[in-house]
Amino acid sequence: MRLIKKIIIILFVILSYSSLAYAKGDLDGFMNALEKAKNAGLTIDADTTAKQFGYKNFNEFVIHFKSANDLDDLTIEEAKDFLLGTDNTVEIVESQENLDKLYNLIMNHKKFKKKTKYFKIFKKGKTKKGDVLDQMALAVYINYEKEMSKISQNPNLDETTRFAWGWGWSRGSGYTPFKWALKTCEEDAKKYKLSGGECIIVDHRTKNPEKVYNYLKPRLKLAKKEPKKKKVDKVVEPEQEEIKVKTKKKDTAGPIIEIVEAITVDDSSYTLKGKVSDNSSDKIYIKVDGQDIAVKKGKFKIERYSPVDEEVKIVAIDKFGNKSTKVVKVTIDIKEEMIVQKLEPLNPSRAKGKTSGEKVALIIGIENYNAAPKANYANLDAKYFFDYARKAFGAKKQNIKLLINEDATYVKTNVALTKWLRSRIKADQTDLIIFFAGHGLASSDGKELYLLPQDSDPDLLSRTALSRTELFTEIINLKPKSVTMFLDTCYSGVSRDEQMLLASARPIRIVASDEGDIPNNFTIFSASGLDQISSGFKEAKHGIFSYYLMKGLEGKADANKNKEITNGELLAYMDQNVSQKALELGRSQNPSLMGDPDQVLMRY
Image 1 (cartoon, rainbow, N blue to C red):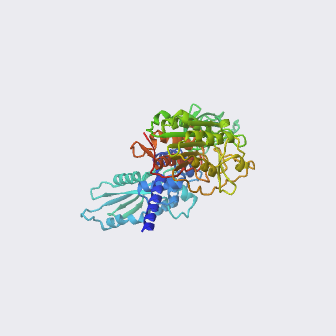
Image 2 (cartoon, rainbow, N blue to C red):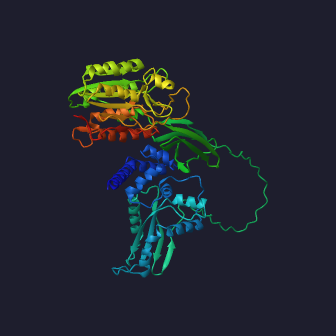
Image 3 (cartoon, rainbow, N blue to C red):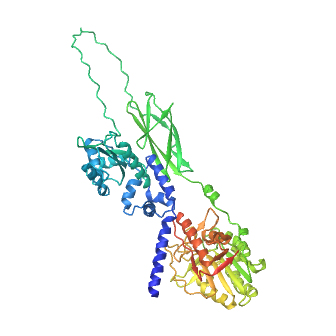
């Protein structure tokens, strides 16, 4: 019976996590980006754009899209086909053969054929209510240009993109059913958030006489009509003296385009401006991605949208058909200041904890190492936590030891762990808080974990670093009432900005073994998994773990708003925010907890 309960709990956790995984993404934001890209005639990179709106990749976005719109049978390929942009490089052939091909693909689409009961009703000529059906029209929501492009590229295409549709009827009143077909089609398209296309009439049927019409017509090109030749009576002209006419040399040079060749913009939506001129032609045409751009008094303006860097190809054509081309390299650089403005600064005064009993805190922050890369912002993490130890946990200044950079050498750290703590801790009465921000490293076999003081040598761990086992032993001998440790470090052998700690600089990460058991009165919060990096947070000038730890202590982690923060609540708050922020850096980072998740960490 216990085994069955465990299985049920595990399944519930997995299902809850999977639903949260895609709920983090900005569905509407991503859909708006797709719409803008289509309007600009862009073909965007699906995975890159998905990441910018909070998804791991395009597949995760599709899971969210399917759930939000009740489209369980939508495949990844179908989603890419009708959500992403059009390839503008294919020459479209609007022959009757291709129009008939598109018509047949629509009428025989596997998802659409299930709905053809309407044809059967029309064939009978009466509804259940007894109404006489006179005419019928079918409207379909598609990207006509995209579908014709696919058929032009592949005449053997066997299926069109998934589409929305609507039916319209007339019941002997003489009123055509087109209006109602288009209206219901647009409602269907809106329901599934389709974009980049339009509703067009595809099929029209009449009962008297009984006929079926393919209503698809060319929409992109109009056939040029040959001018009618006037009939002229044959006239015998008198012989005349030949007149010699001087002809000018034919113009073969393309227009001159004046525009910057490289530009950096701070927004995904931007405008390119330029000039164009031609010595022999007063009419000049500009095209970008196959679309015409207006030219007024020799100037043109191009409105663009792209979430990633791109190259914009500008083609200028004069009235003689001469072409010239220019490519503009565009760098999308969204300013960090824009992100910083949205980031809430740390404020220790908000961490108003209700405290009792004796509190002692040892705080260590090491940014500058003698024999290892920098641990960016670790010193600031420690300096800020000093105030959180006072405000949130109620430790008095004389009971807080702060060691920064050169004050956190191997010898000075050991002195603090032995002599200083021994002078402050009262057996079975004192609550001890330890905060460490800096480098950690596992032994080469992964069986022992070390914290690195400022003068540690990563290649001489056992001699110059603090063994976790020895640290626990030292603390246990002092017999504190409880121990809470916050470790903003990792053991993978990689720094916050992905530099190797070991002198050999081998391109591997050490995978530490399981952290093992801890004493019952210990609670340990770790910044990352054993094989992950503990990342820096440039916008906040803190470690990601430290920033959200201190934000959580300000009350952000109190999920049920009962003025208490448990270990489990703090972990859940940090995991949600730390993992998301690390994902934006292209990394994985998940904080962990060793200890009782239901234990109250602080009251306020």
